[in-house]
Image 1 (cartoon, rainbow over the protein chains, first blue to last red):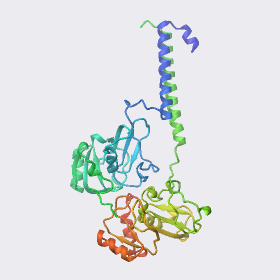
Image 2 (image 1 turned 60 degrees about the horizontal axis):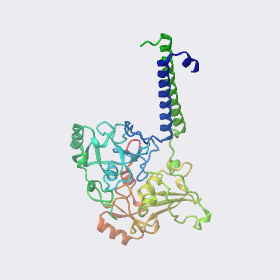
Image 3 (image 1 turned 120 degrees about the horizontal axis):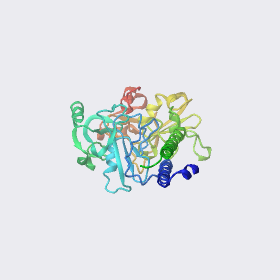
Image 4 (image 1 turned 30 degrees about the vertical axis):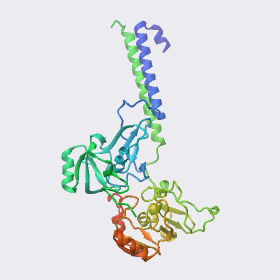
Length: 189
Length: 208
């Protein structure tokens, strides 16, 4: 490196320095990412995590891989790993709570127009761009669920087979995703 | 640019080596993460290990144990301590215990003990305990022997997984009273049809 710099004219030397700095910055960035300290990367595109046989629901501990229906994940500010949800009802119940402790960077659900209902893997997309079917006969990991779709024609095809009605993200209300009873359930003893 | 050919080539070399370093580091980090992640083969016992008997607990070998907060159901992964009014436990003849979120999960487990608990047999199961469903989350009902309990099947009560379950009662009268209010019919443990258990099993139907 030293001999290289010594023999170069002024301008290239600076360019060399810049190239070296860029390389170092890249390394530093990687180091941070590896340590899970990349809190300042909110502008970066988030990559949804994938379900493996050990992934469990962060709300109730349930295994994700063994159960049908769309799963969900939320990336919170300051946390490199997402929180998993075994069901879209739990996702919305969490997102629609009046008080949020941490800022949500992004939430992802699975596109059931593409994923296999019995064993959905991949096909993640941003929850706020989704179309949801409420009240269908098709159950998720926790009984009645919100089936998530990125395309309206596929959501409509699902409704034809399984019933329910189409809702946009902003149309989903807390009372539709009550975990203890309400529109979907009655869990009183 | 007036950069001499040689220097330009050196610049390129420096750029490439920096990129190479970055890529190398990225690969190394990935490799480390891959090495640190668990093996592909998934074992239930890793998620929900049997809790060995603790002689210092002062409890009898086959007496109901308090549910540890971090204990998980070997069937579904849930934390039984979070829904204590529905919880169940199986105690083996050496006192080792497995906790469940609900009677349905316990029944799924009992249908295939060796699969959920490697090296264990159903003949080693010495106690099957369920909660009397007259309790609440804040004040769960008594632990009762599943073999003597009366279960209500087909009621509208939803278990911890927000689906149908098998609430248990210490006697016929309590079970009948529940069934009158919430629907369903009363059955004893041995009368619960395996087909019903499979139907209440919410796991993906592929491979089951």
